[in-house]
Structures are given as structure tokens and as C-alpha cells.
Image (tube, rainbow, N blue to C red; front, side):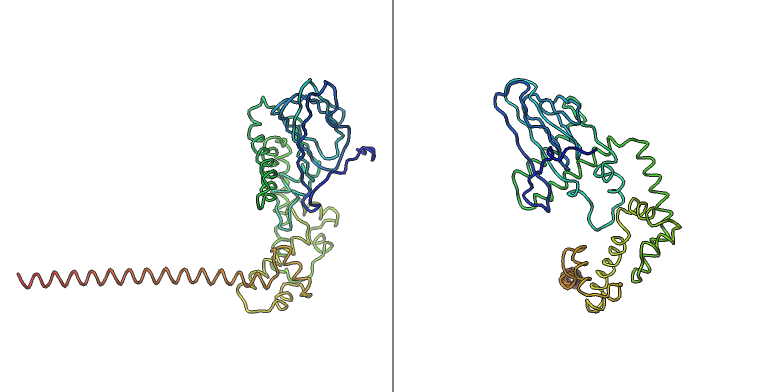
Length: 340
């Protein structure tokens, strides 16, 4: 559905790379029918948590009356407005975030594709209103309280905590509201596709250093490239290129840890001829350059080996001490026997 551009809201995010914000709205002594916010839309999810007062949220022309404790989930792209449903103060939180925040990274995750992606992509929708009268919603309310608390406190790493709680929220909602037939069809389709693609995945695992294109892979599966890309993404949770890169970088990590090959040699071994591109790709997947990763991996191995050696030395010393003590006891008992 296309909405008028003049009603589009450009939501403010402190950091464009982290599209998340929380707005605390409070209106004192409102008259019934007074707008709490005017009609607008945006490309983000918005979760409204009512703290005080009664309000009516109009979402795609459908009214939803909300009281303290109620949760309203506004889908991405929905036209929405709010009005006071009673006189007196009104307070609620508006949690706004873009789907990009929860989209998976480079690592393939078929479970994300199965349970989270359909809601992020708008293929499935959660219920708009979650009533405070339903005790099943208490857990969801608790998760949202944690989201708000983390965001307001802004302790180090709060961004990760907020993201993890949103993942929990989506998983709980998906577990509860995904239609059983949809879940069954998705699981069955995923199982069938996994079996169907098994040979291709095994091929990639053993031929990761060789060039492989979408056309080549689609031909191996007797599919046209469009349908191949669609099914592969649903099955693995990643594109073909992302999956191949994931396998290559994992192998590079193993070689960095277990061999003395240079970074350039390893780049060639895994099929990335350009060392600069390899370094950039490795950093995307591992969070650090390959040289630093090797140093830290070897350091961890050294510490682990040192700990094992220390433990063995300690055990040997304890054993030797015990044996010496036992020999001493036997000697003392022998002397006593001779004296008697």
C-alpha cells in the first residue's frame, strides 16, 4: 500500500547504523479526543506501551483502545494516529526501530529465516493489540521493560542488550502467533529444501576455493537463477555469495591458527586472490584483520597449553609428594618394628 509522502515521518535515530530510538510521551490534563500524535507513517516498526491514561490508536483506519499495560504493535508502513480516550494525563512509550536492526549478519541462520524474517519482511503480521488483561502478555511486557531500561541507562554495550531483547520479543511472538499451518509448511519446506540442497552444500564445503556463480549453482540444482536464489536464501538464511564467503573465512581461520602460511598465501588457498579484499572480507566476518586474529588465536592456544602444562606439573608434584610421604611412613613403621 502506498501512503501520501506528506504524511511520512522521518524518525530521528542518534546513530544511522543503529536504527533504534525510544520516545517517552506525556500529556498533562488532556481533553477527550485531543490528538496525542497526528496521522503519519514510516518504514519502521513501532511498539507503543501505555503507562497512564486511556487512548485510542488509529492504525490503518482501525481503532484500538489502549489502557495502562496494553501493548500496541504498529507494523512497518502502517498509517497511525493517537487520540486521548479520556480526560486527565496520558503517558506512553513509543519504541521505534527499523527491520534492518534485526536482520541477520553474514553468518547463515536458517532459523532466523524461518521464524523472524517473515515478520521483518511483512509476509506475516503480529496482532496489533496485546491486552494487559491477558496474563500471557506479562512476559512480553517484561521484555519491553528491559528494552526501555537498557536504553535509558545506556550502560556500555546497551545496544547489544536492546537488540538481544528485541530478538527475544520477536521469537516469543513468533512462537505464539505464527499460524500452525504456516509453521508446519515452513518447517516441511525447509526440511525438503535442506535435503535437496545437501549435495550442493557439500560441494561448496569441498570446493570453496573454486569460483562458483549463481548460474552454475542453479544449473546444478536444475533451477532457474531467480528461483534458486529465493529457495537458497530461505533454506540457509543467506545468499549464495554470503554462504561461500562464510565457508571460506572459516577455513581461513583454521589455516591462520594451524599453519605458518602468510595471509597472502591463505587468501590464495581459499579462493580470494586479492589480499586486500580478503582482509576486508575477513574483518566483516570475524570483526578483526586476519593478522590480529592469528595473534589472538595463537595467544589463546599458548595460554591453554601453558595452563595444561601447569596443571600436569602440579599433579606430578602432588603425586611425588604423596609417594615420598608414603615411603616415609613405611620407613618409620619399619624402624618401629625393628625396635620392638
